[in-house]
Amino acid sequence: MSKSDSKHRYLLIVNPEAGSRSTMRALPEIDRLMRVHKAEFEFHFTQERDHATELVKEIGADFDVIVSVGGDGTINEIVNGMPDLNKPLGILPIGTGNDFARSCSMKIGDLESAVDVLLAHDIKTIDVGEVNGRRFVNVMGLGFEGRANDIGKMLPHLHGTPKYLIAIGGTYLSYRRMPLRIKFNEIVIDEKVFLLSIGNGWNVGGGLQLTPKAVMDDGMFDVGYLQNISRFRILQVFSKLYDGTIDTVPEVEMYQTTELTIESDRPIPAHIDGEAFDPVQTSFKIHLIPQAQEIIGNWSADTRFG
Image (cartoon, rainbow, N blue to C red; front, side, top):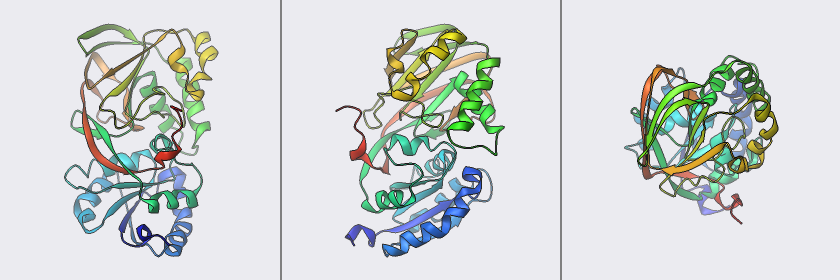
């Protein structure tokens, strides 16, 4: 047993609804694995939306590590409770998409591996995005991506990749480009836009890579921008969303920036870390906060760059 197994006190915040309630089925195994390592921990359960934020504020100071037991939405709620709490965040990914865990190079569907990563305590201090007063750690998506996220929320009995593929399919059949005014880096875009993805991390939608070269501690957002694309062309290039080469598609433009403003004359479908931005907005001010949050991840497993 390594020292890191026992010297930290872990607050495990559990979202009972995450992953179609798979969190509750996983609790006995999590309990067993933590006890095998003689780790000191407590489970605390969320009861409603944004409750994880309140739990962190109320009792987070009593623990050494805050742990999300759920999906991307649970992580997002916890992060929004942590700006004044200098504690690392760990992840036991048992949600629908688990995209932030993927961006942290964690294995999905392997609880033993996730507990091992948590207790190994490999920390990276990552950048955090903030939009209209809310923080996000992985990605903000607008347009097609925002609408697909909305449709996915209407499929509560599905999870993982099948859920996102059905959501993308439904969006593919119905989505129309929307007028946006986007400003960043002295660039002004004022036109109908298909998709805009603002990545701190590099996974979204159950493993799609819209910003495949994003690095979470480089002080920059990666921005994937797609102004227009035909339905047939989407089918042609769809596989590139999975293999990390979407940035080679001529229709996709990639940028880096630290802040953006986005406006429209109509409500903008958008999500942060897989959660719909609620209430729906017609304008966003987005900026990056460098080196803002310690995250425990499987960092050595990120082999994208060699």
